[in-house]
Amino acid sequence: MPAVAAHVLALTVDLRIADATSLKEKRSVITPILEGARRRHQVASAETGRQDVHHRAELGFVGVSGSAGHVTDVIDAVERFVWSFPEVEVVAAERHWLEVD
Image (cartoon, rainbow, N blue to C red; front, side, top):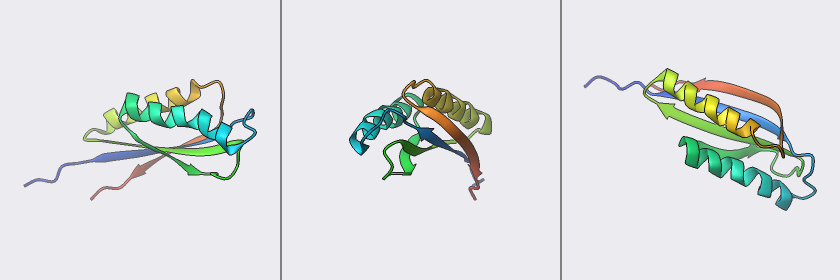
């Protein structure tokens, strides 16, 4: 049986949340981003860094598809979705293709 190609693209977004004065306020800002990305774009998402800093967040998103073009389109949409939140400032966004054997 021939192997099925899987294309996996990860997006890491570093955010500044200027108005958050507590971790609870930070969570109230990032939870709709993470859950919205899962629902709208069918990606895995999580807070992947800076968990103990109330005014910064690192979020990770991963898409998987049989087509490199499709997963790129999905991650493009996720990145636009994150940028659409006025409560956050995107400091950096990085993409990484993951090898699948």
